[in-house]
Length: 428
Image (cartoon, rainbow, N blue to C red; front, side):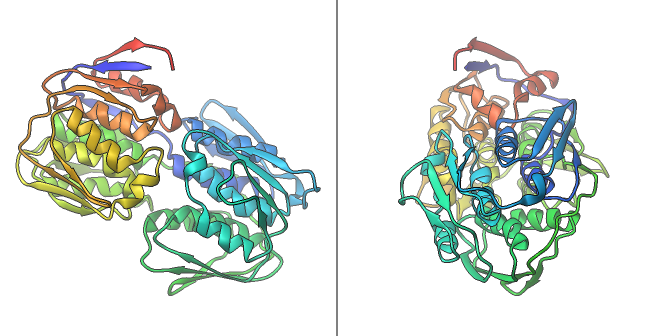
C-alpha cells in the first residue's frame, strides 16, 4: 500500500492501544496457567495473532471477541508425543524467541517457521544455552528451525547485550522444569525494561523468580496461577509516534498510559522534555505540546524501538546535534533500522551520519518531504508519517501496510487527529 500524507499538524486526544509486548507475555502466561484467563486487549496486530496462533497449535484455546481475548490453558501441560508441532511465528521475533525454550520445557518437538526477516534474526546464544541443556536443533542457519528433546534444569548463562527476548523465553520456561535453575545474565544488560516486564507478568501469575546480582534463581515445579482477568497495559512504544507529533506540531493527548509502567519506552517523555517540548502527565493521560527543540545525546541500548521516531524529532530540532549511541542492535530488527532511518531522513533532504552503532543528526535543517520506502518495518512507516508534520511538502510512503504488525489502525487514528492521508495504491 502506498500512502501520501500532506504536511500539517495532528492534534487532539486518542486512547493508547494495548501493548504488544505486554500482550505477548500475558498470552503465554495464560496458556501455561491453571485455568482460563480473560485478557482485556483493544487491538489485534499481526504479532499478537502470531503468538495466539502458536499457542493454539500447542493446544491452548484462544478466542477473540470485542476488546477481549479468552485463553484456555494448554491441556494439562502434558509432554507431547514424538509428532512435531508446527509453529508459524509470522514475522514476530518475540514469538519465536519466547516459545523456543517453552516448547522444549513442555517436552514437545517443534518446527518453527515464519516470514519476512525472521529467518535472518539471530538465536545463536539462546540455541547454545538450550543445546547445553538437552535440546537438539536443526543445522545452524537453516529455516524452519526444528527442535527435539526436553529442556533440562540447571545453570544457564547468557550475554545481556544480545537480546532480552532470549532471557524472557527462559524465564517463562525454567519454572516448568522438574528441578531448580539459575540463569546468569552477563553485563552489560541491554533492553533491561523488557526483562522487568517479564518479571512483572510472572508475578501476576504467581511464579517466583529471585534476582541476586546478575543471576535469576528459579525454583522448578512451579504452577502458573491465573488471576482470572487481566488488562493489557497501554502501549508506550506506539504512543511515542503521536507524542512526537505533538512535540512537532500541535498538542496531542493520549489516555490509557501508566507512567509507572515497566515499559522502557515511556522514556519518550524524558527525551522530549530534554529536547524542549512541553510534557504534562496525569494519572491516566499524557499530553505533549510543541517547544523549541534542541538536539541531545541519547544511549539507545534500553530503548531501541524509539530510535525511528526519536530520529524524526532530531531532524526537526531547531538547534544542536542529536546523537543516537549504542544503537547497533537496530540493524537486527524487521529492517536494518539504523540504515533505514538514515535513508529515510536523506530522502526527505535531511543530512545525517551513521557508523556501526551510532547515528548523528544535526539540527537546524529543513525537512523537505518526498518519497520513502517503508522498509517492510512498521516502526519505519509510522516514523515517516510523523515526519510529515514538519515537512515542507507531502510525504509518500511505499509499503505502508507494514503497520499491521503492531498498529493496524494507525492511519485511522492519524485521521482522527486531523491528519490528511491519501491512499494511492491498495496493493500489498
